[in-house]
Amino acid sequence: MVSLSKIIEEEYADVARADITSIRNNSDLDIAKKIIAKREELMYGAFFEGDHVEKIFGTVYEETHFEKKDIINLCYAISEYQDIFKASGKNDFSDFGYILSQLINIHHKITRENDYLIKTDHLIEPLSYLGFENNGAHIIIKGNTGYDTCKNMKSGTVEIFGNALSHFGYRMRGGNVILNGNAEDRVGEELIEGTIEIKGSVKNHLGNQASGGTIIVEKNAGAFVGSEMGEAKIIVKGDCDNVIGDSQQGGEITIFGNAGFQIGYCLQNGKITLHGNTKDYVGDSMQGGEIHLHGEYGGISPRMYRGNIFHKGMRMSYPNAVFRSIENW
Image (cartoon, rainbow, N blue to C red; front, side, top):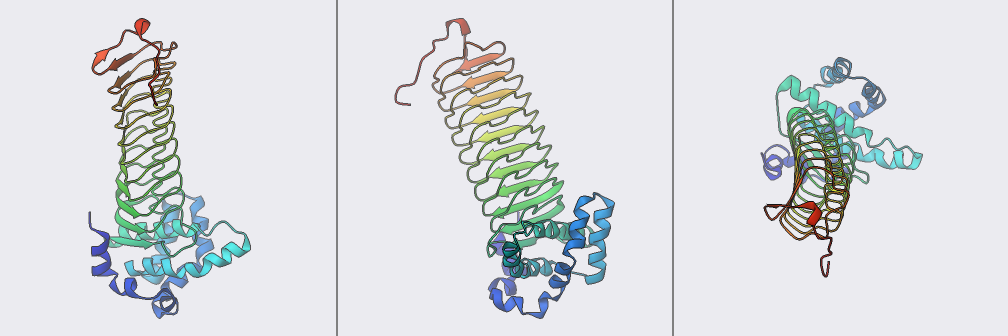
């Protein structure tokens, strides 16, 4: 993956060094301002799919012949509008994230160029839908992102140097995404294929209903990791909160830190491996699958019905399991 610093040095050096105010008044923003003038027309295309959207943004390319540098110029140009939208009470300033993403999609398809830079760290409000439906491009985002980052992404790579709001990687179908920061709820929800790597921590519902792909979290996760997931793979290198693998249908969840109550709640199939300690009600309402405990546990739930629980490699005999609590938890 090409580094952020290399892209800035080689392709965006002038923009990176320039003052934001001077860029706004630069004639290089002419194309960006033409695109902004078409905002309502472009957002109208968001209600459609496939060929219609491609036609709308393809027309923009034919009319302006915008280049990669115009993407970063647009990032600066829209900063003039954030105060206007905020004062008017409108909540659609983040729509520009969708526009940026579709501009990259059509530019990459027509020119086959790569290494796009999006800059958001000068904006008051983060942009949503960045990386939307990316199909092969390499995109670097410097700054925080809003909701639905990399939603419906098909292929390519996206690397973000900032934090993200909820639904990061929602319904991704392929590609690789790296977030060098923290994310809120529902990372990788309904993930189909692809890899999501979070260098920080995430909140609740990690990998909810993911049917495939891989999610790696370097730090901690909240509650409800892997709920109703299928043949996906989730790795959390830190701690997790309560209820891991709720109604999990398959796949594998691996946690290297500690977990709260009810690990394997309503587990149907698949595998959960916990290297740290956990609290009470392990396997509560469990119907199948496997739980592997390598640390200490508070107790096995009396409502554990089917499946297998292993403690430090040994399969447990549930009628003789001792319900106990960990001292100094």
